[in-house]
Length: 31
Image (cartoon, rainbow, N blue to C red; front, side):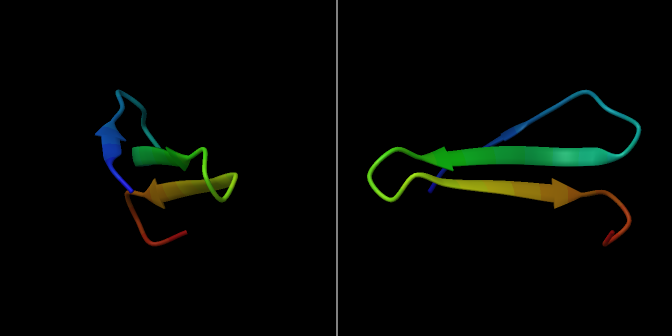
């Protein structure tokens, strides 16, 4: 799954896999 960097104070990146309908969220501070 490829993650895309986002401009946010809390999030570092997000990713989506349409095959498994999985959403990944990467937080900046491990939240």
